[in-house]
Length: 192
Image (cartoon, rainbow, N blue to C red; front, side):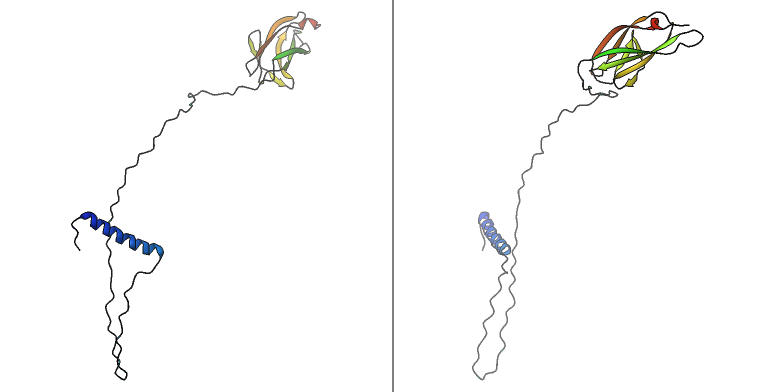
């Protein structure tokens, strides 16, 4: 049958496709031709072979046009990232143990022979703040040794006989500072 209207043809092809797909989806076998009727013969007459018909082959041509709408690419929103400056070292702030304070004790050395000068070890008992601690004496950075209760450093050899007054400043890793003006007890030593 020839259709003048292209839509009618498309509708017929669509219906045919749906029927084939329905059969395939349902798992039913493809339709087969009915067996040809067999001729019956009169009794006593020789049997005649049944007429065979060639099998019927069905060909369904399906033409399908798929229209795909273009998809939009996902929109990527840039996010700000933190970048460290080259060579910059970020040091986390130390946890403070409270208000920084300290007291000082002294441990003298035996006067050395020849010039009778003595050394004094300055022992700083620190409370509060956060290690590591830095110590300056009269503006000069001291090399300290860590103790359980603070730090200590050794003053250079000095003459016996007179106390020396100095200002000691302790700086804590949490940003606190504390200072103490004290007399280093060189006067208490009896030099020979």
